[in-house]
Image 1 (cartoon, rainbow, N blue to C red):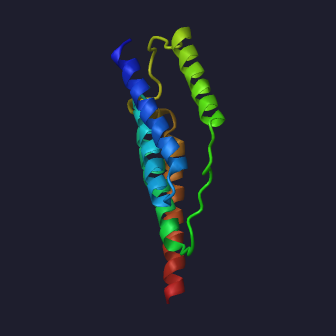
Image 2: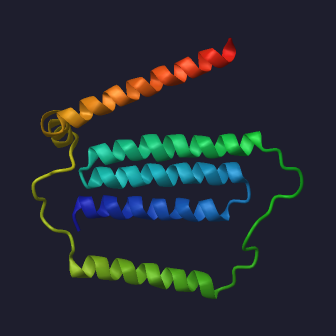
Image 3: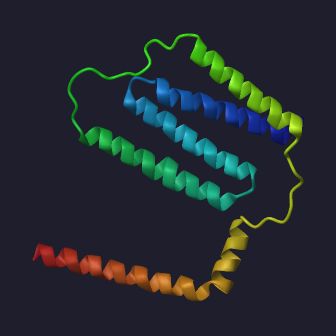
Length: 163
């Protein structure tokens, strides 16, 4: 096995453990922290696929913004009482079934050999920048004007409400 496959397997295993932590933790703040780890590791998987732009967007939008939104929602809602928890009695059948399915998935993925040689990269940030500022320059400029108009309108509405 190459180093790429080993790194992918280790990252996937850690991500799987963090996803289980999202489900298993009783405290919702710890579950949100595990969710942050899952989203960050998905960004690492995007880096393994050499899609840097998607990795950056994944970490900024999901790992940053969504987890912060969840934490703010938790802190701003006051809930008194006991913490609810699903799955106190798991039993043996569910974990064995999940383990068998995951083992079969890993067996077939590594046996079939779906890892194709690398072709020309179209998802890199350099390619996206070149396409955005050459082929789609008119749409980019129109979007910039639209966003500027939205910012001016929102500032106008806020200032009018204050006065």
